[in-house]
Length: 265
Length: 292
Image (cartoon, rainbow over all chains, first blue to last red):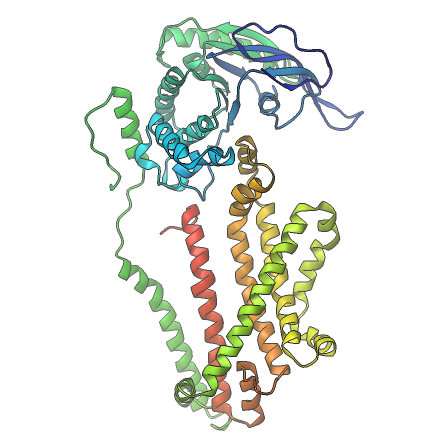
């Protein structure tokens, strides 16, 4: 177990339930100078189980990106603690592939940085590109691929880091509906085949219901956990089905209530 | 479609994924290579032709006597004779050697300077704007000082060439690093690029297009500074393109003078197009910034 950050308390973390892979406890994040502080996150607490597909939804200003930055140590919390038992990797809304490297080169880079020997790198690249159905496109440059293909390369690149927790920040937000539907199926398959834990941030409630085991709704300004929904529907789910629609409606109602709360800000 | 892969039908999802991949890739008509080269070449040839015609027309107007302003044909004849002679090839070799050494030094110094400024906020505040200021200083204005300090020799020329080119090269690197998209830096950080590896695998390749732009500009400055230097610093036994130009003027040899100017222009353009132009296009094609 790795303790990522524990700025306020020095005692060892309390016993974490055995299957918890990521535990966020009372995390607070403020920005700006003393006297003019902006509170982004206020006491967020969240446990993610190993192999779980957890979706985070929230209106604007709920601090989703802040939270992901804290989990990946791109930023430090102002209070509370984050305990991670595993290795996270972050995927962005844009695939953020390096334009000077081929698809295979992009997948290979994190292993190069981790000094993985060459022959093992090549094997892994082949396996991962095959996993995302891009075996024939390894020598293509990012600009020669479509948006959906680039996102799959990004998934392969994140897995190449030996990541067992994928943090995804609205990864399909910029794709057309057809591609997005197919990538939902594809991501679900990869998730099943690899047993990876996914923390999936999205604006799209139906997408969250389509994919998640659990949906956590965040409040806005500051971000706090407002509500939690368990998606008890058989997989694979059809994003256009009535069951998905019904649950999406209640999650959306919860989000709207949150937005109304800010009517007089 | 060249990328279509035929395989036994897989699962339904697999087929759908493969189908949408194929549909989303653009269909690119294959363009004949020879034709592409020609379509890039003929406008340039036409421009040169028009220039030569206008030159001839000015000469025919007899604004100046022919021994002062000769037409293109005698000048090109002189150039042809000089090219197979002894002096011009030697002078060109010496000049190109100076250009190579001077530009190489500027490359090293400019890159180190740029790296230092990129890494240190204090240094940036202190000297970044000075470097840009340095570029506006005409290089020929440095020569009196350079000659006083170093004497009439190679060192004086090198000093001014480096001073001319290094700021552009440093600026190209600084601008390149400043304009790296944030998301690529974050991606690098997430993937574990730290310390030297961060520079090697993320920052330097990401800054490369702008760095090559800086090299291109640096070359132009280096070439100009070198020509100015060779006009002023004439070293016995070391003929150079600049010194030949100066001698031609002293002997009122208009034919030789204009032939030499053509050599200067040609070398400048050839290096710019062939070396830096090719590099620039190769990088932009790789990044997908250029329709090939």
